[in-house]
Image (cartoon, rainbow, N blue to C red; front, side):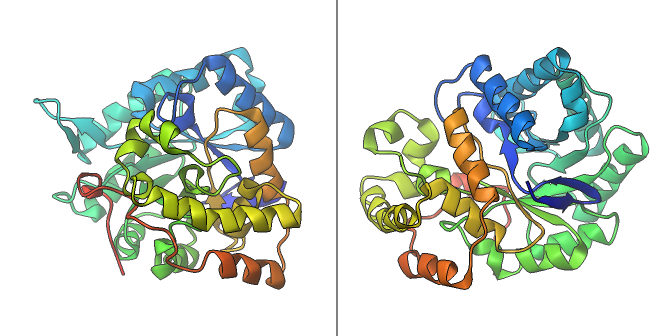
Length: 330
C-alpha cells in the first residue's frame, strides 16, 4: 500500500478508526475487532486511531489486549489516541485542556493500551477558555516526558492550527472529510499542507451513505447517533439515499464497491490526507483497502463530481449540541 506521512512518521495511506471497536455504530465483539486488526497486519495497514472515550475506554483496552497477544503488532502499528473530552461533577459532557487533565487522561490511555508511549496524542476537543498556544505547550511537554511522540488536534480551524504550530510542530489535524463533508476544502486542507500536518479524515464514507449498503430507516433507528443526526432524519435520509444511489451506480459501472471509490476520491485531495474509516467487518475493510490501492484519472474525478456535486448532502453533519467543541470556519 502507498505510504504517507503522519508528521515525521510514514504510515499506510489508509488507517483504522477504532471507534468501531465499541458499540457506537452497533453491537460488536472483540473477535470482530481482532479480525480487523489481523487483516490490517496482512494488508499493510499501519495507522490505528482511537480515543480514551471510545466505548468508555474499551476501544483502547481491545487494542491493548491485541498487542499483548501479538507483540509484533506494536512494531507494525502507529498508534494515535486522544484526550480532552470528559464529564463535569453533574455528569454533563465537557472539555478540558488543562495540563493535569490531559496528562492524567494520557496516562490512563497508556495503561489501557499497555504501551509506554503513543505515537500521536490529540486534543480531542478544544476548551476555548484555554488559549490554543497553552494547549500546544502542554502537549509539547508530554512529548518531552516521552509519553507521546507527536501532537495533534481534532476539529480545529485553520487559524487555530497556525497558532498551535507556532508553539510546537503539529503532526496531524483530525476532521470529518468525505464526499459528503467537504468543509475542510475551505482552508484546512491547505493549511495542513502548508504546515506539514497530516489531515486525518474520519467518517470518510459518510457514516455509511457512500457504501453499497447505506443505513436504512430501521438501521438508523437502532443507532442512537444516527437517529439524532440531521442527515439521517425522515425528511433528509431519503434524499441522501437517492443522491448516493447515483454514486453507487457509477461505482458499479467502474467495477468497484462504493466504499472503495469514496476512499480513492479522498486520497486524491492531497498527499497529506489520511482516511481512517471504521468497520466491524473484514469484508468491508477489504473494500476500503481496495480504494486505497486505486488510481483515479481526471475523467473518473469528473464523473464523481457530476453525480455528487459540492453541497449535495442534505442536513448538517452535527446537531446544535454536538457543535459544542468543533470549530467552524469559512
